[in-house]
Amino acid sequence: MQNTPPEQTPPCHCHGGFIAEHDHGPCVNHALERAATLCRERGVRLTPQRLRVLELVWRSSRPLQAYALLEELRVQQPTTAAPIVYRALDFLIQQGLVHRIESQNSYAACRHPDAVHDGQFLLCTHCGRAVELESRPVSEQVRAAAEGVGFEVSQQTLEVHGLCPRCQGGPQHG
Ligand SMILES: [Zn+2]
Ligand SMILES: [Zn+2]
Ligand SMILES: [Zn+2]
Image (tube, rainbow, N blue to C red; front, side, top):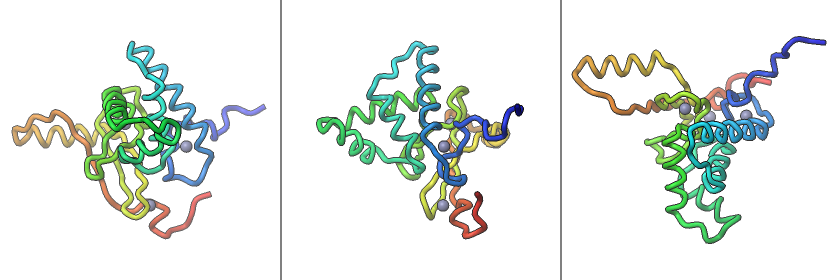
């Protein structure tokens, strides 16, 4: 009998494609269950359409554009119209389950939707993968700096461009 093995870190912190290859299916399932619970607690409806969009965003290691989501949805339901995707995304963003990456006009799954937070993303310019940071000190520093020049922040999304560990050609993990 062993105590908690190190593999049992919360699956939602797998950071998608940034870390070594792994079976991402359980991470997605965990995330969808978590989202369903959150929506139930908040008394909002996670419709099958919204859930499907969230699943697609979660399955992808790269942020997805709306048209890519639409194409995926049309595989199952050819009549799906674009407004359905946008309405689903609006809802998911509102609930903090998805973040919008402004510079790419794309959407990424939130890795920790339990608490409302600012979006902070590391974006690999080579492979397109994205990793979400959630650094409260960074958010607070930006806010403080903005207030220092008399600016009132309503929303902040930080997008940092560079190369992920895989694309630096360095030693591979795992
Ligand atoms: Zn994963
Ligand atoms: Zn987030
Ligand atoms: Zn990369």
